[in-house]
Image (tube, rainbow, N blue to C red; front, side, top):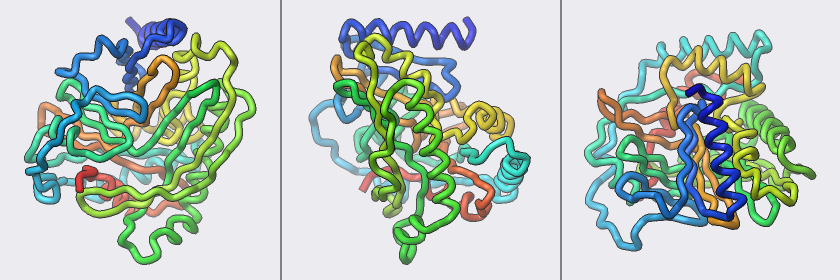
Length: 330
């Protein structure tokens, strides 16, 4: 079965379940090669645990936090020179005019003295997913929400360590961060216009604070909204897949930038930077799968990255990639 067959099957199932108002969970990888769509009453908590703003299948019990994550998670980042080689390749593509922003990511080996399910239960995040002990995701980024015909998306671009003096102003006033965020907002506005009418930016460049086991991060988001056709329940799959992969973790223009990512990153993102979410029969809520730990045959890896523009500094981008290696446990 080819990629388009998997996509068509997943879209058709989401469309059908939406038309029936049947609640379901969806998990879609970055390249949409292994999409998962499961009615909520068939989700087995032995293999999948999830939490969104509208539904979860986690038990209402307290967990004692015996793990000191500041000591139990140690990262072994790639040498800066290796990162810079990829950075330079991306900047060369930008200078050729093939892209404006490229989201460059890497997988970093980590030492983890706990397990993925423990992290899932203790992590404090807007969205969480533990999948068959293959990976855990604790994402702060909403992808798409749908309720009563209104669709919203929330691109998140721009990160800084909150402990840096004047961090908020530095983040808001950075010309590089402004250019990156503006480009992605434009991209998501165009993506939303493919499926909705009356698309507009309702909140622009607001700062959110995220607590981690290493301290606090500041990140910038925007809110974009539109109005769906009256029969949108019958087209939930069409709506979601039309906007994939998520613009905040690819870049612009999307198709060419994805080609650059595949050629440059030299590893498989898999479900990292894909999306997951829930339709509860009335509302849909979904997340971009960032903040992501995966179990591999060689041990655990943490996948992270950031947007590269013509104004980017490789040392700053390398540091941002490392700053994002955290668990939101505090």
